[in-house]
Figure 1 (cartoon, rainbow, N blue to C red):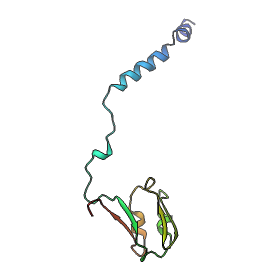
Figure 2 (figure 1 turned 90 degrees about the vertical axis):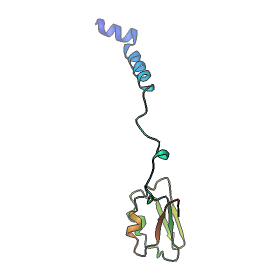
Figure 3 (figure 1 turned 45 degrees about the horizontal axis):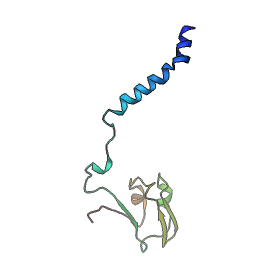
Length: 106
């Protein structure tokens, strides 16, 4: 009964949480900034579909795990760069090799 009294009146749990928050806020962050990481020269950045080669079979659209590609017809497609993980599955699945990933240096 005395423990309940101290917990409810003195709000010990709230103070523990605040102390833990202060302790963690002064520690070094665990994650790294992705812009500072050196990537290989083969890192994929820019996605493009060659309109002349594309036959609008929509295989790339079906195989994309992120659902980042939407093909309307041969000349019109949408690629959501925020959803894309640049895994290259669409490039491997394309029967006409119409999909291309390029790095910044090209």
